[in-house]
Length: 137
Image (cartoon, rainbow, N blue to C red; front, top):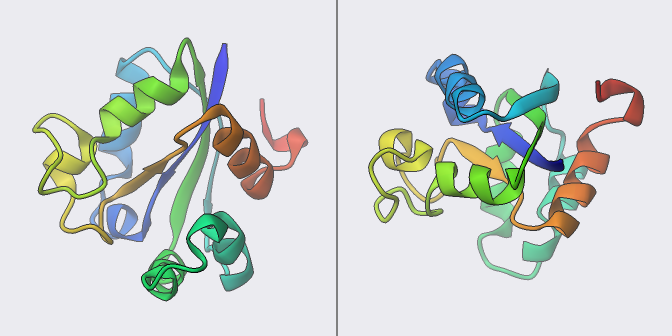
């Protein structure tokens, strides 16, 4: 079993897409083993997006992810990281395939509805940033 971090971003929460997205995850056979609605603060956002700190869009990422509530999850299953990434689609919704979450619901590169870990290392780091071990069931 593999674990991944998965998050519905502020635009997905605001647009009422949380239920649809969770349904897709569960229908794919993945198990949600931790979930909470949170308001990401600037400190957590900077840690989460640390790899982009030197990039010109870093401020926009931080501003966006802190703009409203998010739903953070730990998802478990066989090949969970790749499965979630495939379900998520490309970062730019205009390039994401129909049937993917971003392809179906994304608006632009910033408001692209969800975040999914891209590697085992990222998943471990992100899960530890957003969840205490006692919150994972």
